[in-house]
Length: 238
Image (cartoon, rainbow, N blue to C red; front, side, top):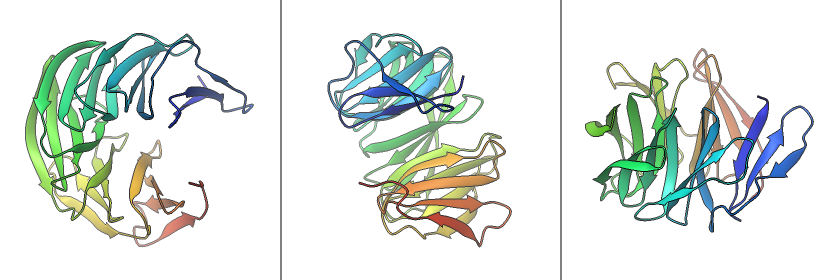
């Protein structure tokens, strides 16, 4: 499958053909407010948004059914039928659209990521500037660790495809790399953005990390040459 899915402030999810650039909007009745997270899981795309909902939609079909959450959802990450959803008030575990656990989170979750094995979730805190780690096992979600180093809201988190690293970024513009075996910092001080970092994405070989910021730039970082980076200005407007 050579398709990219995007969600927008206007509540629309669009399918893009990477080869041709052709696109189509998913038909049917979908979200009613800004979409904040998408996760392709098997034959479905799971979406969450400002309308306090999670929705599961077939990749090639119309919008699927939804389930309610307690507040605007900030992100979703999952594997198979299991999804971890971060809202402004809670961290949820869903199996399909069945809510199997809800944990209160008074620290204002802002972002969520799941490791490749689907066994550990990372959630960025908006109010406490920390990364909260949860074990994911069956229908159980349990907090197992809290990572403290950021000085501002943690706005993005992402596990490397090989599972060895967790990248976290904050509102101040710093990116930190953590070793997932020890949870020690392996890199810090990546601060070349001039605005809040909103998104992180790894290369398939886990050797490069791309970051996108409100400064309208994308920066590509290399684990092999950590003191240099590639800055792409005006990569996205607004």
